[in-house]
Length: 252
Image (cartoon, rainbow, N blue to C red; front, side, top):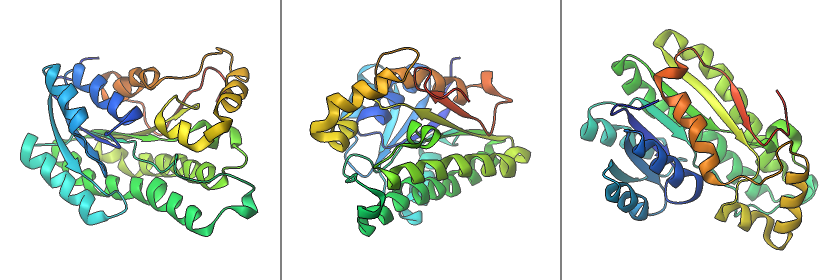
């Protein structure tokens, strides 16, 4: 599953899962556009040290003009866009709680980043993918959507929307040879997960792990293989799917 110079945009690439995607796909031969609202210099340094080809881009996924500037920069630098990993999401800063106690501002923020942000980035890169003759979009959903996470309805609902967006867009873009799939991981040991659960982290991780057939909490590296496969030509006829990476919690 070598990527043979495919140009891959990874959003939310400054840390955590996005940074791991950038490293893993870069190591497999991808040319990476590491995009984030935060500074991606650490990610670029890691890729460069490993001999990879990458550029950073300061991206606000809520802003379509920012997303289009990102796509334009990718094409100007590398000549094309072959894949998009829609990883940027609002998670850690959200305050959980009963559904009727969630602040309206938190609800709107979750939808703006986690749903509208995915839509914006898809709109931005699809013209370049059409020009290239096809491509692959991988959207990050979550076990929160496939299982139904309580006390985080804003996040859960946003990730359920990502699954619906993935399926509808896969049907729209099939004629363009653009594949659209989603990954739905369990809780991954990242800074965002630690922020979201706070002092309830250990208990939450134990509960999540206890519901898995393979009882080990996920690390960011556990997601790279599935993303690599979906981006590669090995998955040429896979589209509209949501792949659970959750240790066997939800068996779709």
